[in-house]
Length: 222
Length: 222
Image (tube, rainbow over all chains, first blue to last red; front, side, top):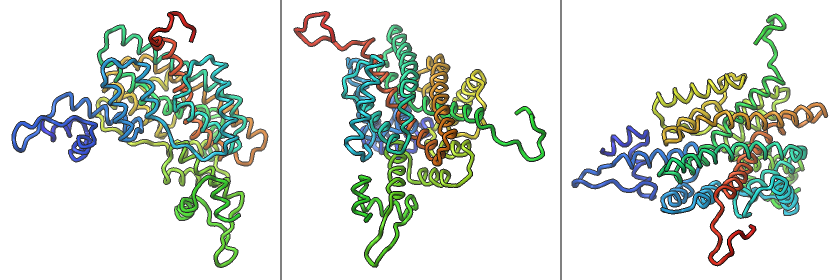
């Protein structure tokens, strides 16, 4: 297909497609004549993957490139794919006093120990967790340390369900397992946050029901 | 304190502090003489709050401003704070065919119905969830629909634990309840994602143990 059709089918503008080619996120099309470049379904799929990582997952161009390189290296163990994709999710570190960071690090270490988590200590997820906890404490949310295990238990349930899917895919001989694992982590994270938003809305609506409109009889079912 | 001390204590550079004042994220300091501006502990706290929302929560300047305005309007019901903070977390929508979006919308609607969630349908979390699910399907992760309830159940547990904290804070007469609720949602989301990353690392390490280094005796405890 030509770039116009690729653009129509992917929803990505032609200039953005060219930008992705220049940035190395998308292989160049095949030049068939002086003024014509042809793209295949492989390009379409890759474009969808790039937009998923960037738009839905919130990854940067550089992080997307790193994740794609890892996915495409044949024979990479899945655990390695996980590591690279996690590294692509690293965040900026807030400026926090050393002693507050050290205290949060101790709490996360103890949490990992209580949960029996096998961690290498190299994942940016560890630093992100420490940053988030220290930030919450600094802003007076000390009580949050009391529900760390609730957060962790919920995270374990999701991770276990996701891994079951990965194992099923591997048993079925899925040939794009690394790609699906990466999408599962990045877009799955966005799904988790959005469902958490909905669950928060529900929990809040139950506990703090909005006031009835003026004149409405009390006890009206909502 | 002067701007140099505010910068040192907050870890935010003086030019960035001035930028935040111009953008309306931070009230101006008090001008005490021709060349001197004084800042208070209130400024320091506000600066930490801004950095938490931007650095840890990943909010934009505009979204941070909207969230702060909501937090500071006296008498806003907590449920309203939740709505505004959720709106600040809206993401860019990926280009997806209408019928794929409609199918994902049906699945999320049915999920909400199964879970008994009370939703207004106005939250961007709803659209974010639909986008994430449709994106995953488009990239071949159809099997994911089978674990939507696992994701939802985990989200409910977290939301319930968070709301318990909010209720306890309200009972203790916490005077910055709206602020803490907003931080809890934004920074709490970052904490959830990082703990999910750690749980994924643990689950993967258990199921796909890395190969033993060459020459290592088999069965070596790790």
